[in-house]
Amino acid sequence: MNISDCLIIIPTYNEKENVQKMIETVLSISERFDILIVEDGSPDGTADIVKEMMTKSSNRVHILERKGKLGLGTAYIAGFKWALERHYEFIFEMDCDFSHNPYDLLRLLKACEEGADLSVGSRYVKGGKVENWPDDRVFISKYASVYVRIITFMPVRDTTGGFVCYKRKVLDTIALDKLGFMGYAFQIEMKYATWRLRFKIKEIPITFKDRELGNSKMSKGIIKEAVTGVIVMRLNSLARPNFYRKSGGCG
Image (cartoon, rainbow, N blue to C red; front, side):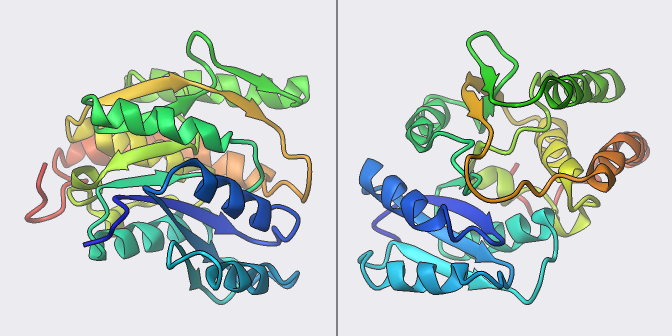
């Protein structure tokens, strides 16, 4: 068992401007938080910075190195499996670029401790907001979530958000290897699978800020995957009601 029961999974690719500060900030918030950096072969030296931080972290910082950019979804799935093998009870997703406020980790954790199985840092519930994004990107993000709700009937307002906390039992129930989407739609599918398996989801209002350092990983191809993928995802789950349940899962 771990001294810490919470693991923050942070995928990185070319995040040398942010990764050290992010690690230092998370470690300062609570001794319960460990960090796993899933590093996709950044040519800018991100991995070297993480390894240096590992020597100073009393075994609270870890790295999972992969060869090349393999997709956001595969990074999180690799991180989930790593966390489950080590018996963490609360597993978080968070960006490295400070678009997610690390201090909101405590609020996501509290929601799960108080009964939620998945807590979602939400831009689109009362009290949530977006800062420093151009109007067209806010429009696309907000109405992508509306589109997802129309197609899936899922009662989540921020379906594309990537700042979340899962209880272990959720990830231990979902058939992670059956997930079909590895980009923008991955976040949608994880929430949808959680909801289809009748776990409780709670949205927590957050302020999302656009990154100040480094480059965005968003692309038109990622958005297209989400638009077309949601329909396929919905049809698959209707045809096979237990599609997302792992054999022997605990849900």
